[in-house]
Image 1 (cartoon, rainbow, N blue to C red):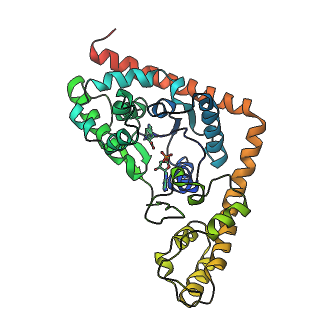
Image 2: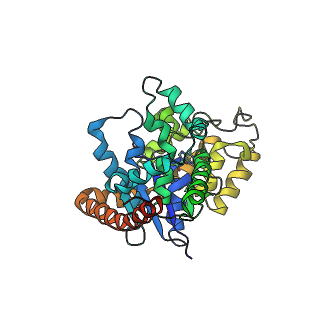
Image 3: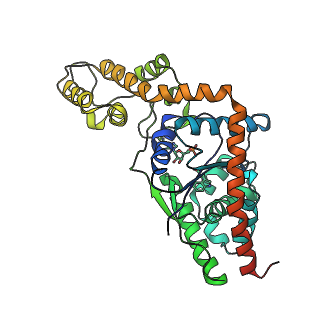
Length: 328
Ligand code: AMP
Ligand code: TRP
């Protein structure tokens, strides 16, 4: 049987190269291998405080970004979670086979309840159950996620086993698909993951111009051991070099390693080349994005079609699940 791929992403604002190299670029490649569903998970994003007025734009913006990056609506189903009611329906059912003890152990719940201590709501607690419903509704088996989501996937597998044991085999056990370790670190602190929440200087947005990228890189952290122009550097320990590896060809990489280790080039030369190569990767995405902005109706239509396709599959699963539960 062909395996189905499902992944979700929250509409929480602009995307950075961490999102792109850590997640979306892999999704784009995986479209060649699996039938895919990609979901803008708006119901997940309302579990923490958000700007109500901005929400619908954020959802549309994210959909445009995904298409601009290469998610192909002709190949894959791209849709908005709240447009498919079966997600919350199945989440309720799955919550009856989910242990509170397990939910209590979720690291993300602990972190987010600390961060939003004024609003520790049941939605935040049940977040992983909705995630399990997202996946199981389509009987997906391949779930590309970052490391931070692996614990949620383990819980999904546990929920799957409990459901199947209690009501008869219904769902295959999904597996996390960990992308080849692309963990993009912050420009200003190479011990932290790149994230929107650490300030504009710490990330490169997919929408950044060459000038902006150059500026951000100019002040970005390098190998801490290299203090002066004449000190040889150790590229393998340098965040800038890690970024080079994502976008630079063999010739440029050799130039950078040799130049840095022998102090033939300075950090600024290395960063300039990185900015150029990074922008080369981002430019076609930015151009496609501009085209889509001009035709947001087309994007809305793509999402509506995606929801229609997703609904069709989801309704079948819900019917099967209800029958197994002895419900109408
Ligand atoms: P977030 O908006 O943080 O929920 O991230 C959306 C997706 O991008 C998830 O699959 C994350 O694992 C991935 N991601 C976010 N930040 C990074 C990063 N700095 N490096 C690699 N992947 C990331
Ligand atoms: N929780 C995931 C994140 O923050 C997003 C997500 C929601 C998801 N539902 C999913 C990812 C289902 C994979 C499968 O990154």
